[in-house]
Length: 142
Length: 197
Image (tube, rainbow over all chains, first blue to last red; front, side, top):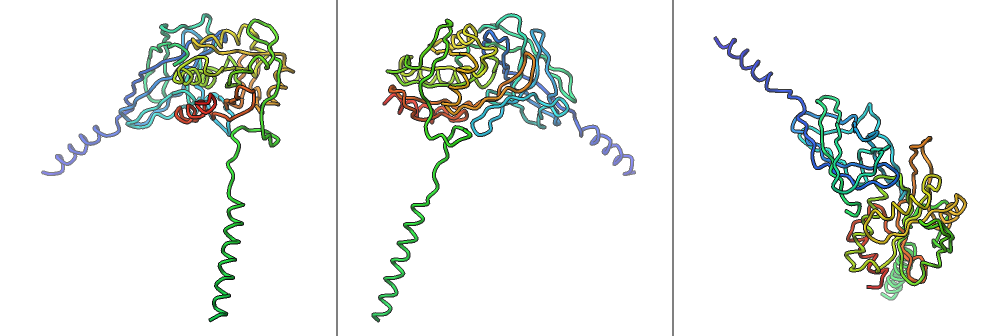
């Protein structure tokens, strides 16, 4: 009598557990670009599910890569993020890309970007579908 | 009784001696700027090139305090962030004339007069952009205790560099530094001291 009910209960419980990541990205911004044709874009990735990794990024306006600035005794260094590692988006948490830390570096811009412009980015994750986000370009002195 | 009193006074003298030694050996703060030799002071006269391609002598900076930051225009994150921060803090002090902001490139190969001029002009406030020959830049870096190293190759190399801001008073004497990760409040206090507020 009890066995099928217990089995059914187990099935229901099993289907409720191990949800995937639930990713969304927002608050994407960048400063105006100079003649160098490169900018850094910053954004927030939120995850309401299991942990995931941001492993890459694409932009139609130039070559986009994930970079990390780090400081070492007053010396600033910038390095690409290893695509096989990516950046961790914690379970039920956030990944913040901000000034002085991880950021999206876009190079090879054919035209400078001015305050008020927007550019589209596609974020690539290890376990989730790509996310599109619109980056709003702000004045440099912000 | 007398012997005990002598012993006690000897102990007092010994304690005072130990305290004195500890005080003289108290830990000293480390300087914030990285350098290979122990540079006690930074600065000195320099000749570089301004955004119009004309020779720029450091003597032009006398008469007003200034903040010097070394970076490169292909730096999309730390350099604009630092210059924007300096512009913002200067606004908080009330006037663009409070102190000068000087940007010197550590990447003269890519950053000529036009590049540093355009970069300095991004912030909507007076910023002096300077470049120079590789020899001129190397000399300024050395005198100012600045490290930089090209990393990568081709067109898209990055440059590791000291990102500390150096503050000089109106007599062109080195006064203090602002570290890249210093809070706005701490940086503002140093700038206030720099301009004599």
